[in-house]
Amino acid sequence: MNNLKNLIRNVPDFPKEGIGFKDITTLLKNPDGFKESVRQMWEPFKDDGVQKIAGIESRGFIFGAAMAYEHGIGFIPFRKPGKLPAETVSESYELEYGTDSVEMHIDAVQKGERVLIVDDLLATGGTAAACCNLVEKLGGVVVGLSLLIELSFIPGREKLGGRKINVLIDYDSE
Image (tube, rainbow, N blue to C red; front, side):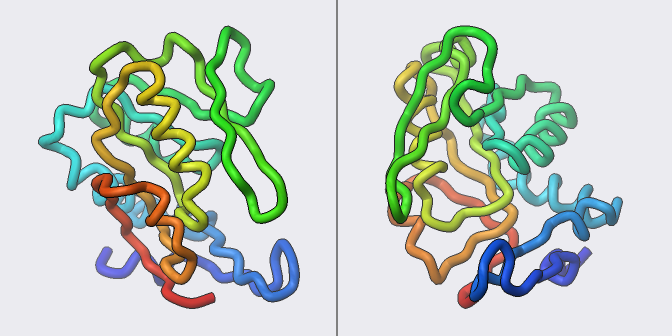
């Protein structure tokens, strides 16, 4: 699989006019493409002592859970507020107009555990930065972030500081 980008469908004007939505369902239904994307998302972190993979709701669950299963390590879900059943810790972040939050269980990460954060898309960086903060609040160590797609024309990477970031597919314009 040389070019995973060819497996991503662009849906114009979704969810609103002027947005080109990057639909990953076309990659997911291709067994070779899905397998290769999971492999490539793990590869740069294989020697970093990752102990848990944390996936960002919802498509980060797909890639993160597959990676955790493949490598025999635990999986942590980051969820929207009110979706997790036990005690949680929360982090808010800025949106274009307003704020949002992300949560994880308070017992998801132990002090010193090495966590890889996984999602399908990096755009503004707000959600990813909030997830990094949550892991660190609980005493975990963020070894990096692995993302299928980056919209590099949006400065989201800046919010992640000098963290190790792996991106498989870059879009430098809408």
